[in-house]
Amino acid sequence: MLRSFEYDDQWNIIYYPKKPSGFSIFIIGDHHHYVDHQDSFWLQHPGRAQILDQFLDSGYTCFSSNLYGEHWGDDQAVHLAKTIYHMIMKTEILNTNIHLFAEGKGALVALKLMEELPGHIRSAVFLTPCLSASQCLENEKHKKVYFQPFIKSMQNTLKSDESVIQATLNKEKEPSLCVGLPLKIIHVLDHDQNEKMEWYKKIQSHNRETIAISYLLPEKRYKIAGEAIRFYKEFENVL
Image (tube, rainbow, N blue to C red; front, side, top):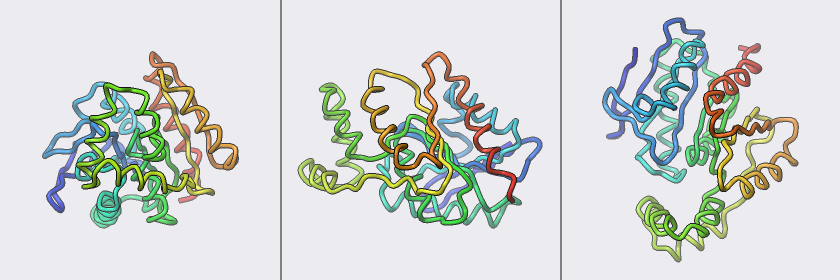
């Protein structure tokens, strides 16, 4: 069962479990993510649908927003995410402290949302996240085929040319990852694993008590939901 609604020309969707636990997960997808009327990327993609089904089977009410498409964590998308959270908390019978599940570039919104909603984020799980736009840019520079589409995407989102984008990213601060908030990073190993693993280790070295990191082989993707659910349940003893 699901319900979709439109706000600021953006579709949003709520997925209801058969046996709700009262806890919820805000799903923030990667660049290919979308939410439409009665439909979403997470319903259409087999792997994401499997994760969603396992969340629902565990009693979690899940919700998501289109967030203006490919947003690169811009303030407009973060503001909408915050607004959708408040709207859903007013209309649904849910614990107001939520979990986050962010994939790829969705982590850019999630990181800011963790700061924008102090006291209302119970825990967060990031799946192979992009933790900074500048990091993503640096990784893409080594892929000649993908670099120009990558830059074009940023230009369309940020409404700036390449030189301005580069200058802005050069000033970007390293993510704080909200020290004190439970966070688990699940990284599916791929050809970029060395750069990302070094980045994760650097972050974890400053946040050992709050950040957990798991690595999965591509053929073990089916374990993603289980890893996330086990982590979420660690932080549900206090309502």
